[in-house]
Amino acid sequence: MSDVFDLTCDLIARPSVTPDDAGCQSLIGTRLAAAGFNCEHLRLGEVDNLWATHGSGSPVLVLLGHTDVVPTGPVETWASDPFQPQVRDGVLYGRGAADMKGSVAAFVVAAEQFAAAHPQHPGTLAVLLTSDEEGDAIDGVRHVARLFRERGQGIDWCITGEPSSTAKLGDLLRVGRRGSLSAKLRVKGVQGHVAYPDKARNPIHLAAAALAELTARHWDDGYESFPSTSLQISNINAGTGANNVIPGELQVMFNLRYNPHWSAELLEAEITALLDRHGLDYELNWHRSGEPFYTPEGRLRSVARDVLAEFAGAAPEESTGGGTSDARFIAPLGAQCIEVGPVNASIHQVDENVRVADLEALPALYRKLIEKLLA
Image (cartoon, rainbow, N blue to C red; front, side):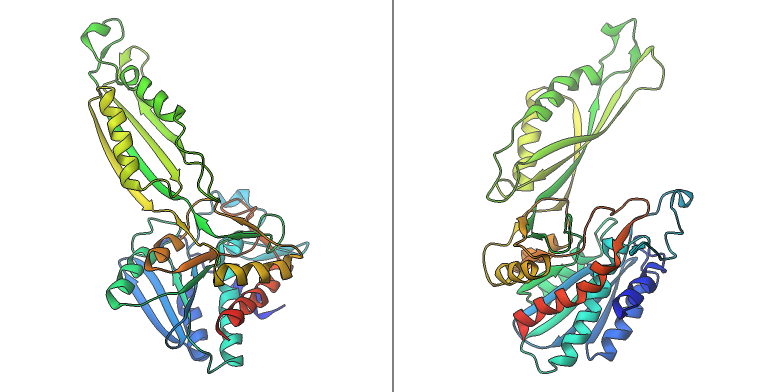
């Protein structure tokens, strides 16, 4: 098999369930150092981060990825051990095959090849990896970005290897992401017997109208290539388990995925005002995962469109859909950010996989992007 296949298998075999890197970055750092990269290992809290650079000055092109993976779930539900990579009918199976050890391996191979072919290239080629993308995302790229800001480390372009393709490699170019805002709402009532509602205050009844208004609200009509802002309730919990007890408290968790019409601050103010208007006795705790970002037409987007069209045989769809990625921490540094990676059909699922043909095509795709931007 190929170099990228072998490296991907080596990475999959390391059970790097977030935030454990399981030695992935040490392996990669050794390879990149041998290829002439300056490697800085940043251990922040329980998280491993790797910053590897080749060349100097501007422009700075960053290949952004993560070595951690989500838990496997019950191993017995997999057709083969999730940490023992296996090929069946031209498909490589294993946890992280698509999200995103295949892309990380392809980054490494492409970077090695580019550095060997262009040892005196202009600007800086960098690889940034973390083991905290699938977890809390506190001491990973979020923390590294703060360090970069303090150092004055600029970034012009960022290519994230998240699995972005839909049906075939290169058919989608992600040019932005929505923001993500989560909340934990606690509505207070008074517990009591269901036969004596006058002696209690049912927080479910009290909050029902507010929650109905919140979920029915039309937030906006989208923004350029962004879909409309949406709110989803993910958890509701109340009661003792008995059917004759009015609960004393209701807990609700919800999340908003929002476009640049909004900021986290504006959304928090809107929702707080709505709850206040309904006269609820409540506590509300927010978690800001990241603001939306968008890469307008420019050098990075134009180059990526041309390269992906060459690999996919047609111009890619340009999208801002999906969840979040670590690019949300790089974009505020002033970088243009895109996401290019393999098909995402099996990510986070049992029997996660990537087509071997796609995996073996990835280094050439990334190398072409690097060459058009830096060579």
